[in-house]
Image 1 (cartoon, one colour):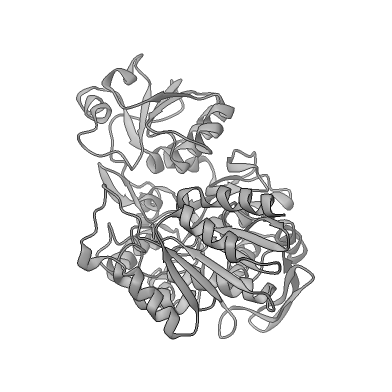
Image 2 (tube, one colour):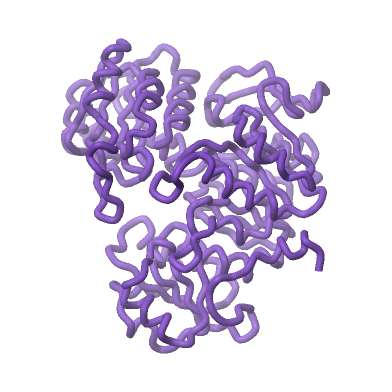
Length: 490
C-alpha cells in the first residue's frame, strides 16, 4: 500500500469493525447536534434503524429529528443501549463520566466518532470534496453542493447549517461527489484529532486559516498543524484551492507538494476577480484564470466575503470538470444557508438580518457586505460574545475595529459556560470594547441580555435602518423578540 493510499484510510479510534454488512440498528449519543442529526438522517436514508439520546433537546433540531422519524431518548443512561445496537456513534460533546458513555466502554458494542463513522460508511464510496477553513466553510459547502446539483451531478452533502436549496443540512445523492464541511474541531473524547482527518479528501477548498477555537487550540501554530494533517491526506495531483488573502492558508497549502494547488484573490493569484459591483440585489463580478477571462457571475448575497466563497467554489468546480456556464448558473441559483447573512424580514422599513458571525474577520465581512448593499442606510450591529474564542480577550482590539463599521452597536454581556470557564483576567472586556467603539465615533452600549437589547432596538430603530444580529448561538431568543416587536410596531 502506498503512502497516499494509507493516508486515505485514517486510523479509526473506536472499537470493532464498521461496514454496511449486518448494520441494522445504530444508536447516537448526543444525537441532537447539528452534525449528528445530519448523520442520523443519512443513516436513515440508507435504510438503518436509527435512535439516539440527548438532553435538553429543543427546536430546530428536535423538529428535524421528529420529521426524520428518529426516536430521541431524553437523558443519558446505561439502559439507553438496550436493546443492543449494531453500532454506537458518540458525539463530541460527550466526555468521560457520562453514564451512557461509560456503559458503552464497559460493553463490547462497536463504536465510532461521528466523523469516523461518516468516513467509513459514506465517504469511502464517494469522491469526497472537503471544504475547510476558519471562515466561510458552511456557505462554501452548501454553495458547491448547489452548483453540482444544478449541473446535474446529484451530489451527496453534509453541512453545519440549514442549506436553503436542500431544505436541510444533508442530502444523499446518486452522483459520485460527496461535498462535506471539514470542521477542525475535535472528533470525540476518545479521538482528539480534527474531524476532517476522517473525511478521505479527493479534493479540497481551504477558505482561510486564522486563530480560533481557543478552548482546544493553544495558538495559531496549533491551528496550522491541524490543517497540515488535512493537506497531507490529499492524494497525488489532487486539486487544492486556497484563498490567497490569508498568508497562513497559502503557507500550509504549499506544504502539500503532492497537490495541484491553485490560489484565488482579487489579484496576484491563479484565479482573480474584477469589475465587482452590487447591482439590483446581485453581487456581480468577472472571473479570470491566469489573466484569461472566464466570464461573469452573479450572487444573491452581498459583499467580498461571499465573493471569496464563490471564487473557491468556482475554481474547484472547474477542476471537477464543470463548464463556466454550469458553475455560473449554480452560483446565481444559490439561496444561502440559514443564519449566514439570512434576511429575516422587513417591517415598517426596518430590515432584519441574522448571522452566525463570531470571529472578528467574519464580523467585519458581514458588516462590509451590508455596507455594500445598503450604503445609505443606518446600520445596527447586535453582537453576542458567545463562542469559545469570542468570550476571550484574544481579539479585544480586532472586535472594536470590525464593529466600528456599524453606526449603532449593542454588545451583549459575555456568555458564560460551565463547560468552559474563562478566568476573569482572560475574558473579553465589553466595557472596554464599547469605550473603544465610542472613541472611534460609533454609538455603542452594553446590554445585560436579549430582553434589554430588544427593548433598546425597538425604542430607537427607525424606517430605513438595517439591523444585523451576530452570534454563534441562540442569542437568548433575540430573533423572535425583534421579529415579534417589529411586526407589532408595523
